[in-house]
Image: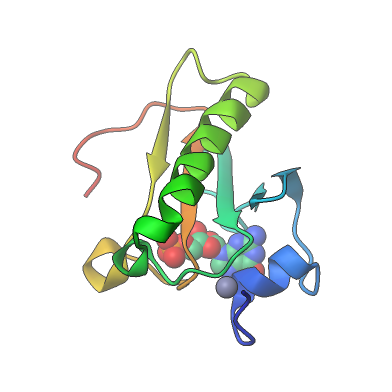
Length: 116
Ligand code: 5GP
Ligand code: ZN
């Protein structure tokens, strides 16, 4: 379920401190240590999955859960109506640095597209 050397597994377990924003039985959300927007929250699954690239049909419900958690947190934080960005970096070209699947929820400023 968890991966011994994974930073986000350690954050989920509370072995590494984080600023928690939300949690439930499936996911854990906390502030990014290097925020790229006024609000930058990471939403991670409790269960270790490396990336979108290794997710399978078994993870379908979990992936939907993470997206709905992002939408719910955005409303709770008060920037849903203004708008926000949800990002899932995947593998090297996608800019993924932590190989435990996570959503970036970014809010509080406008975002350009394409993101670069
Ligand atoms: P990725 O580049 O894999 O999509 O995103 C990893 C994110 O994790 C980065 O935005 C980075 O700032 C964040 N991050 C890395 N280490 C830590 C940490 O120890 N604590 C927190 N809260 N965020 C981290
Ligand atoms: Zn992990």
